[in-house]
Picture (cartoon, rainbow, N blue to C red):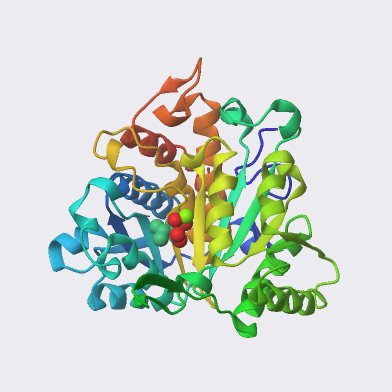
Length: 393
Ligand code: IPM
Ligand code: MG
């Protein structure tokens, strides 16, 4: 049995709910998607994900309508700001957002010669906050086919790993008050870290729900030996845990978690943490898979609305060369089908098509190894689209 896209540890999907309509797929539907190609490799990977979505549409009888908006450096070039109010409003009116990547080379780009709130990344923070996307789901799992790319020793990896980082995305240090000023002739910069109990509760609830459908374990990560915000975090997470007796809760300090991720990643199922810690730990978790070009992510609000994007960045050094790996974006589109459109069968079909192309040995440059067949961005998208099987196939 080939390992499923979401790894061997659960039934092949993050939320794993019952398949609707006896598995035959849903009635035909129209999905209004806002696409944000963004900067760097963003446009070429989003193009491939749309190719795959279109194939899903024709195979299952749905149609997807795309409205493209600008965000990041390209929006700065066009409008002088990383996200316009009109673009944010268009995203708000859609059913879901598909994002490529934003930003350029920090040391060497005109986009960074301006105030922080005018840089490309400010657009990303504004859309997260503006659409209330507080729950960031970042899966990290080891593909057996790509296990050689894992930077950890074989004895550490053992049977592989399959974890999900649940990162709070609209609070904490990222959105606290900040300022830089002169105090007694000395420059001083301040950032503040605030969480209220409601912000903690709603992300904790999502983490326990997901864990209940996976392997039933939540590790909540904080710095409760130092920070007040972490002590409140711990208290609220413990309260939420009482409502999920089938899920096992453990607490871990963030420095220890960083260590445990490289010592024994297989111990984790769902890692629940605040914004800044989640930023750092999710990069670490994706790096140890050895294939960051494969990892999707979702950022959700209270309802079914979400923004879906690859876990990797805009890679300006390889933009426009047809070498970028579109798989993370294609799998992000699969997450969109599952969470925003309730199209589980269709999402399964996308994940199966990715698995098939990998099993056939096709690789983009970043995941190439001896014996593989190297192909470009567009061909990878076409091959995956070509292997989507509709309900009657
Ligand atoms: C991420 C990125 C962003 C973040 C940056 C680009 C602002 O690192 O999505 O993890 O820190 O959230
Ligand atoms: Mg990050």
